[in-house]
Image 1 (spheres, one colour):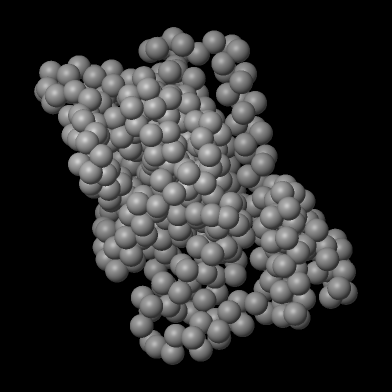
Image 2 (image 1 turned 30 degrees about the horizontal axis):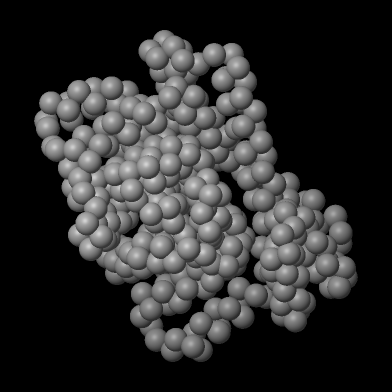
Length: 426
């Protein structure tokens, strides 16, 4: 059976590398396994329906819609101005504003690709016009878009919660400090590069500017703040938080800014439905893949292999081994979490790993995988937006890639960075 599993995974990787849609690749791989193993073909739709039948998944379209509605209000300019007032005075000021904008903007959208699409079309041309190299501008924007994935709401954390049964509210809280840490290591990297290349600040620091721009940004920033507060104080569940986010976004865009037209509302609904459908299809067929791998005994074989390669009782070392495995898979597969977590979950339970802590680590691994060749989907999108050569963008991204790896190591060695805020829920 392990031979069949290896053949199935080989087919999956080949089809993905050939450019076939991930859903078609998953269907072909699982059907091939069922055919060769003599399994029942109807097991595939059964597992797909089981994968998308979790009630918690209703949170996903709600947060996606809320982010789309917030985006329709034109909040990017307000957040950019606030970010410029906060960090624009530093060397390489515009690059720091890029990170700050992604930190704030991504906390409302919940997906790195959506954040990249929302901010990249603004930030990359603006940075190039200000004298920053095109590949650097695209690389920074691609990597900084991953910051918001750790700040609630977060689509990867929703998927992780569904697969593992971990509290979504606790996961949301666990991502706040790591998200700030990720932004911090990126800004340190920018400061080093700015001093080396002579990049200048974009403005001086003035409290009056911070207060003025902050006043315009406070309402958009209120959504993630209220979600966090509601979860900490038990005002609503994570699913109810999604409904609250939609209501808040609607009120803000219709009653306050009055920028939401019927055409924009229709477009937000259509985009949210398409993105939700794409994600749920991958979740369902990834569940079927995980079931097939489980039937083939892959989790037990993988666990035995890791124990053989790392004959130690040190859980941290084995966590690093699992993260390395996830990173290798994440270089090719997107989205990673629904595909790999059904395989890793039995090992995590056996090692008595805190699933909330590992959830933050695997989401961070997803972010790193999106900017690591051979696929590097975020770099591809950013290079396309900036009309730059993708290999030059990849080279320019190396300092940020290493910065993310350092942040992942810190988060792995110091679980309290992830677990302190969730502890407030108890």
